[in-house]
Image (cartoon, rainbow, N blue to C red):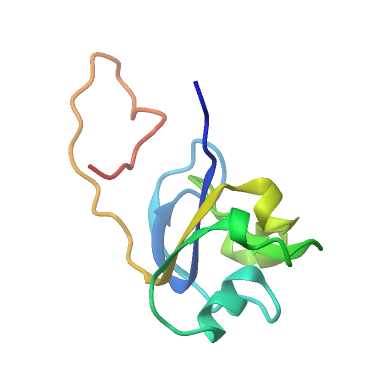
Length: 123
């Protein structure tokens, strides 16, 4: 079995996340990506959505700041959201959305009395 790592990134937009683990989720605006970050480089190459196969990006062999956003996002600590990354070593493919839009949460009925760990999610 082969495993492929697929990264996702956005230049700007909004998302739904908590500010810390188990925090209530809320819609948050994501500011424009930092100068010379991976997301800004993709934006400057043309402000449209892209899918890149990173094996072809062998010339990116030095770390570049990559904004890592997950279920936790702290807009007050934008510096802490960037990870120095050699993109072709981190991912086999990268999906870039120039301007993201937050998912709309849906009601999820579970047998446990708490929100599932993977919520919110896209279908």
